[in-house]
Length: 172
Ligand SMILES: [Fe+2]
Ligand SMILES: [Fe+2]
Image 1 (cartoon, protein in one colour):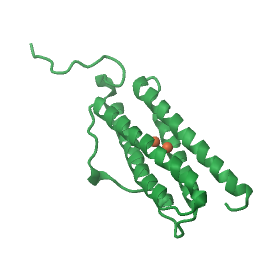
Image 2 (cartoon, helix red, strand yellow):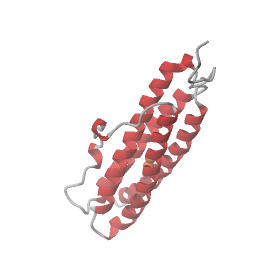
Image 3 (cartoon, rainbow, N blue to C red):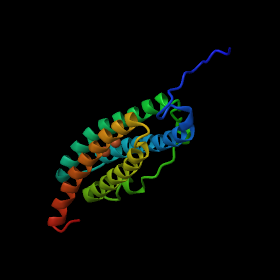
Image 4 (cartoon, rainbow, N blue to C red):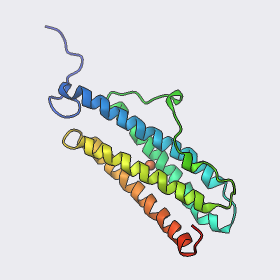
């Protein structure tokens, strides 16, 4: 009798029947991983570049968010590994955040706020896709992504509040 090297659970994301779904889920998680990594890059730039008194509050929150987004990237990487995937190397990275490039004027904090809102909304949308994909299939990943999605909702809400202030003044 042959020795089994890996005993697979009969149900759930690790079952042999769900091989294709596991592979699709790993792809979704890789996308999420890259989104977090790019957000870290963008938030470092956009928390360093701005000039002016009014940019201070935005800069401070972005600095805090860098650590949160880095933690999310690590969690996505860890989950990819747990699902028998491989965390991609840097050569697979493709930048997408056109809206978070430095503004032409470094006092243009509205540009930064709008860029952050777009990044957070995009993350929330992609994580919603993962949460729905995991339904009844992988509650561990689902649980993790729900918690991360809440962080992004908090980020989004905060920056929408910043934007509102500028809108009220007719500056956005
Ligand atoms: Fe994040
Ligand atoms: Fe975020």
